[in-house]
Image (tube, rainbow, N blue to C red; front, side, top):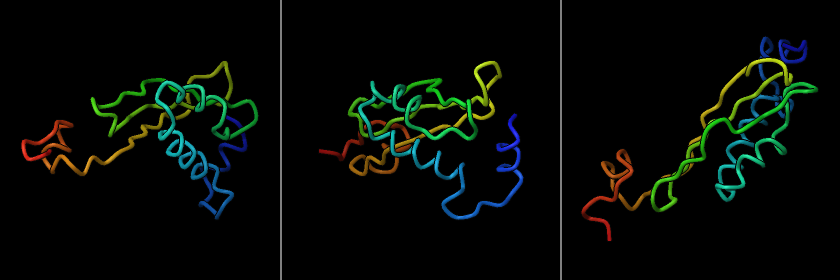
Length: 113
């Protein structure tokens, strides 16, 4: 683990220099891209925590039948030769037309049009 990453993990977040917050926001923003493009966007557009670090889409993206909800897992490795330092589960979507039980089960409710 790099010194910069260790330092960032042990200090309280401070405004726009919060490298974790920036990465989390980028991962959320990427969830609105075309699902097939998400792995490429994760690998190329998310700011690494340290020089040499790499993000990758490790699982997904998976969507429900009407593409209202999406989930994927992104991992970060401090260098190509190390195992991932963290894994982030990104969940996008709120299908408001299916009711509470439909949203929980990802199936349309009987009252939806």
